Image 1 (tube, rainbow, N blue to C red):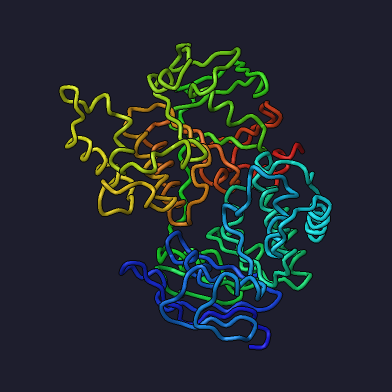
Image 2 (image 1 turned 180 degrees about the vertical axis):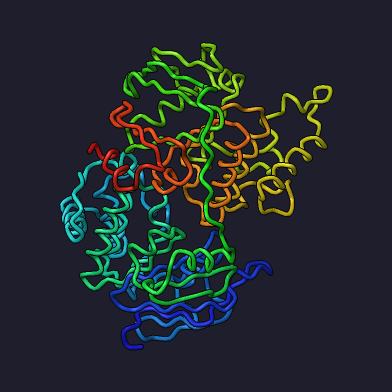
Length: 495
């Protein structure tokens, strides 16, 4: 096709006998926003690395701007106008914005002497192209994820990109930042840019894309115009599963208060927070980043000690000075960043699940390996963690299965309250559905659950109540069955 900027035909790629791509094809037109979707492990990342020259396909054909190639190098792909923005953005955190934007250009030109004046000119031209306003002298490590992403986009656009491939670009962004990114993408499209938007988030596909390609298990499942697709079809193509309608969590018994927070305050964190949590309740908590919601939960779990106020468990005031204190009172916490704070990535699934009960698994000062294995296998079976061996390292699992490992660890303990901070961030549709089912099942058995999330449908579909935080204070309370996403968004934004 004359208007085709990139065409991949029957691409096959294997790694040590594992077939990552089994004859995948993708066609991307000039000036379009195309979504490449699929669950974790479906082959999306492998395909974009073939398109950008990082991987050489075992079989297949690559056609860029009408030119056919059996393989391309990264240098050829860039010369043809293909730029990839990976999840780590490939930027230097210890350098300034200006240095990050200008350095690649200077290196490409083989310049041996750096000119600050020329650096500044390149950087200014880069950010002006997409209407990005930023302090050029700021260190990148001090910036938000959204600003780091815009630096990567500015750099790609400056290097005459014709096609920008964005790999899971919204994983760590708030709803407000996602909308801002989408405005930038639409602006790039208006200037003739093609965008390949790699995602597994259903709402994003419908909002930003015109056409889609869905992969599953390294194979094409469906491609076409987004307007011909509905949410049920999308979910089925992604997972191969039919999802039942979500059954709202039953209302808790408000005569049984499991935890009460009274006038809890932490300087520069939150102020005068009070709420009750009932047995079997799923309590949602949301608000903009910086609203104090995470600091509050970290105080309840003992990461941060509140300056004043009370925490009452089962009618008795308790003092929580440490994480061990919180755990002793039956409180568990799944952090927002499971990779850094929630998992031992180079340790086995068995060790990650059983660590919560090591005190009970010792046999004459030695860990009972048999009991560890049985406990871990029980967690794998209960939460449908996809693995053939509990001794495999956690880093080999998908995001959704890693999150299930964290849940399995905590639920090996006898908990009264489980706090989940961003429980489905970075997981695909199938894992998200499973995790929501786990949360509702726990509540049904009487556990009290607090869900902190930016995902408003997640909050509205799973919670009994929602607390909205703003500037360190609770600014509102809603019942999901009596509201909608528009009202909730308005309250979050201070309306």
